[in-house]
Each structure stands twice: as C-alpha cells, then as structure tokens.
Image (cartoon, rainbow, N blue to C red; front, side, top):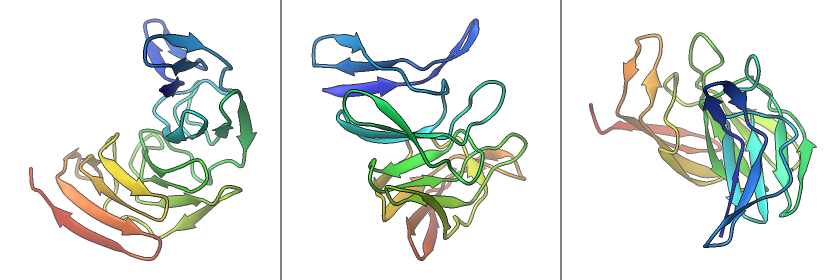
Length: 173
C-alpha cells in the first residue's frame, strides 16, 4: 500500500494537486492537496503523511500539509522558501534538509515537531538536488550527494546529521 501526491508535468507545465492511493493492484484518486507543487519534501505512511515546501506557480512554496488517510490539512509554513530539498522523518517529526530557493542552494535544516518548524543546526555544504539520497528519522539522518554551490557541480559529500551536530565525509566523485 502507498500514497502518491503532488508533482510537476512539463508539457504543458502543471503543478499537480492529485493524491492517489495504491492498494497493491490499482491506483485510486482521492482528496487533493490544497496547493499544487512538486520537488517538495515528504514523509510518513499511507495514513499519516506530510508534504512540505516545493515548487509551485510561479515560484517556491512555504506550505506544509498533513495527510490523515482521507484528506489534507494545511498547517504551519516552512520558515525558508525552497524546492529540490530532502525530507527525513515522518508526519509527526521531520527535518527538511538544504534545497534550492532560486539562484543558489541552502545549507539550513528545519525541524518539524508536529506543530511548527524551527531552524536547527545547518549542513556544512550548500547544496540541493539530492532527492531521495537521504534517510533516517526526524531526529537524525544521512544526506548524500547533491549539486553544490557556489562551485557548481555534483558532489559525493555525505553528512550525518542530528539535532545538535553534523559530521561530514565523502565518497568522492
């Protein structure tokens, strides 16, 4: 079982609001997101999920929405506009890592406590576009790769993050 939501279609350009449930055999469309967007962070399960930030029309979105298995509810916004960021955690406790606000990348991390977002310890490298190259719980995780700024290019830098510190290593590229 799974839940799939949001996204971007390129031709013609559309920011999707659709939510679809998968039961192991077929997808069924259900309640839509309030804000159409893609390239956001998500986490959780089929019955308890979160969507934060992302690229809307015409720019990034701060919106956060929680899925309860049947509908979406708008909750507190992210503090920093971004897309192409990575989410680590669940609908009740999540971190949003790095991202791209338009002309550069970010190193900041925001933590969701189930009610609001707060800025916490930053990553050591400005980057975005790592996609699902991360994993962990809301209190700690690993973030690998991405695209660095201001020197633009792919990176093999890997950071182990927790709420109070960041440790950096590299797999090289």
